[in-house]
Image 1 (tube, rainbow, N blue to C red):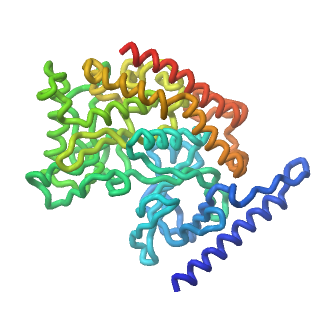
Image 2 (cartoon, rainbow, N blue to C red):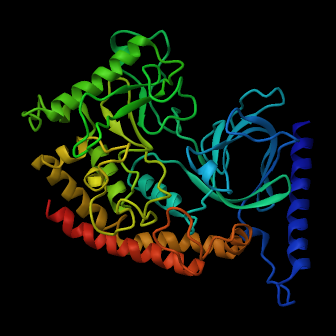
Length: 461
């Protein structure tokens, strides 16, 4: 029966690909000439979602059917729960991102390996809209993995919902505790003492959304730092949201443990002895993760960096570790506020430029940069990365390779026929090009300028 189902799915996928090719050939170009046929092998993987009459909303997920075709191969065909996602993008932009959960016929979670990614049930279809290169998130996630850290694996796809093309999306892993994702110990609700209590945990600094309990920040879903952010002017505070265990599942004992661990780290970092190798901050954190997290946010001048979509985790018997990185669609010069478009200036110094913003950067980063040992390690790491992974030409090559994939697939033209935003200001664009080529050239030129500035700025720390 399974073989019959697989054969049927393969027939469906081949038929759909043939149908798509016939539509393209039949339509032709506006000048009456036929377009160059696209080899099916060059097409982006195609994701088809049929809502079966259900209306997709923010939450909860509603049952749909999903078909994923890569070339002539069907890699998934079955039921999937779907919902809109994005703290603000879903209300601001017509092109939607989706949270996807694989289900069986009884609407129970099932795991599958998609695009050779580790088996899981939770996935994301991210919709680049204000990012007209379509690539900012994918590029930085790829760089982070090559630097040795877990970050969401990505695949560029074309999405169709209810027979309506929705353009280029990024099929990617949702951040969560899993041996193939954030690989930390599974903390059970009966592990409330001793060594068991030490992990694993995932926290984030972010807006409240999703499964956070209650309204806004509260004792159920978060705890507050004892230290005000440097340079802020409106009494802002830093809050840490419980991501894993989440607000609904974490026990009182676990809340106390992880909040006290963060509190002890911050107290040591704020103390006069913060540089001491034994009683300072360093024994409590994975310093290398802090350095690389800093570098990834700084090479992009991520305007949301350190203060939003900021994940950290702690394994059982482990130290506080920064990451994985998340949400860089407004980075790489793509924001026109708080100097987000500038290729000069430190991203960590956001509070000095926008002291009135509600979400501020914790004092951690400025304090760390006053430790000569930390600075020396940062400079050494920067020198190593600049000779390889972060060589400007290497980053440009990554971009060119992804653009080539999109171009050969005809996906760029198709995306901007569906979403005609080229040449238009879409909040918060710092630059508006008149073509996709302008947008990608700006992206690469901005990176060149940024890396040159950082070479000098990091050397002068």
